[in-house]
Length: 317
Image (cartoon, rainbow, N blue to C red; front, side, top):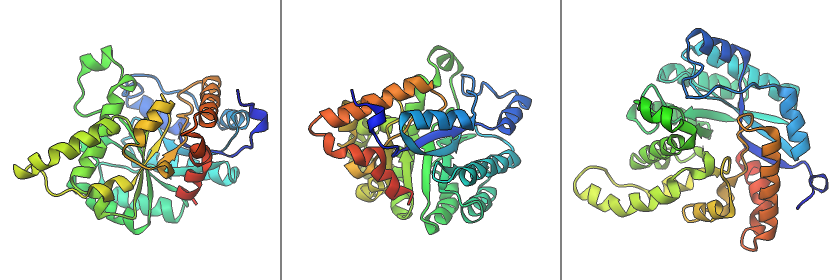
């Protein structure tokens, strides 16, 4: 195994979450703590830093966890808390600000404030909020603003709308539906050429790209039939796909990386932990395993530094 002590603290983690007391309190008052089907973990910045030091993670990108708060005030307070952590721990934290969707105008105001005043490093978007899915026409004005600011967007799956209660109880969202939800939202953006029409936006897709390595070839093969029946318009595949980056949080493996490389290029792969949803000891072992196969696998070894930090450094300069 690769010894952690022999490795510089240079990993950049693009998938971690901030869970503030105000966020938890608001969800508790609305009886929404179990909206996503499982309890939210506790978050403590000192514990986060301790894990980062032990695992060799230099910088973590913070985003708000699911579910989406209904209060714009809670959104603002969370963004300010993340900005404070960034200021208090220079070089250790970046953050992508949450927005009060489905209110598009309020979200534009919050995005401008977060990027221009709080110096957010990007924007976090849920796959859907109250049934308003990424790719829907009413979000075009928001994407136009984000495009003007060359924004990085980090996606995260939320509970689908509508949701089947029986399926959710029997197969918790994180086991499968989150992957479907992510794929659904990205596919919805592709079929409307959202990323081609707003080419200065970069989008990070979580959890090893969800089902996109399987979905994209199917979409491309069926597009001519759908277009012949006037069900979708022309799709600029290259422009849409070139805007997508992929974090390796979750069930990463050499096989998962090779699958992703069928729809993207090595400079679009990023390390992600999903802290604090996974126990720190498990995350450390997982990162060690990634370091190991990125050293041992001949076809993946040239990608090691790209995945662990170089690609993220370029994405978040």
